Image (cartoon, rainbow, N blue to C red; front, side, top):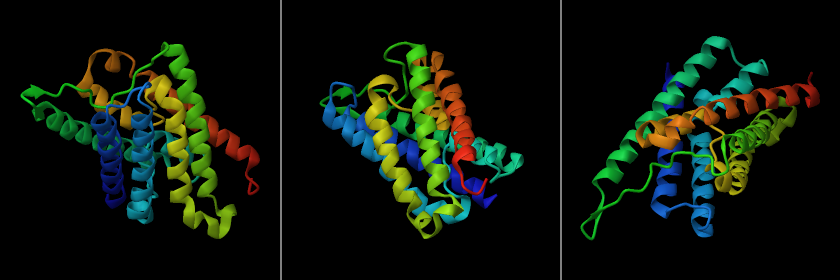
Amino acid sequence: MKKYLAELVGTFVLTFLGCGAAVALGCSADNTAAVVGTAFAFGLSVVAMAYTIGGISGCHINPAITLGVTLSGRMGVKDCAMYMLFQVIGAILAAAVLAAIIGSAVGDGVVITTSTGANGCSFGVTNGLIVEIVLTTLFVLVVLGATAKTNGATNNFAGLAIGLSLILIHLVGIHFTGTSVNPARSIGPALFEGGKALSELWVFIIGPLVGGALAALIWKVIDTEE
């Protein structure tokens, strides 16, 4: 149970700080500084959690990573399901707190109505699905490689490598989808955002999960232990 709770806490932190930064900075495709800031917020959140709960749960904090790890034979099906459940719960709790903060925020007498950092397809669902599959595949592949036993002592820096890669992933993906590569991170904000975010949520569930599965397949092909 402790490792499941660790995943809940880690996903809460990732969603709250990452999506919170997106909202606070006013992240949009035409705001370069906000895009960079949001990318760093998500990446650094992963680094922080990797060195906080990595020794407890492995710090997946992402159902796509959990699926990739499971398909790679490093985790059982029961743990996979429980990890995903607690990750989604953590993201929902984070989105709820963020929504409460935004809803009660007042500046110069005007209530702030910015979004909760939910994802959306800027160029249609087909484009969004392709982007999420490709970016998640690359991201989960980094995770599987950085944490592999074949990396020896270098996997002590896995958290840093994974966090930095997530920054790069966001720098590419924010323009197209807001960057999910994480179904839990998308589910929480979408539930409170509603509308387009909720109707397109399937893209940010299916896309990352397909990407996670593809990463596991690619890793099985190139892993020297196989």
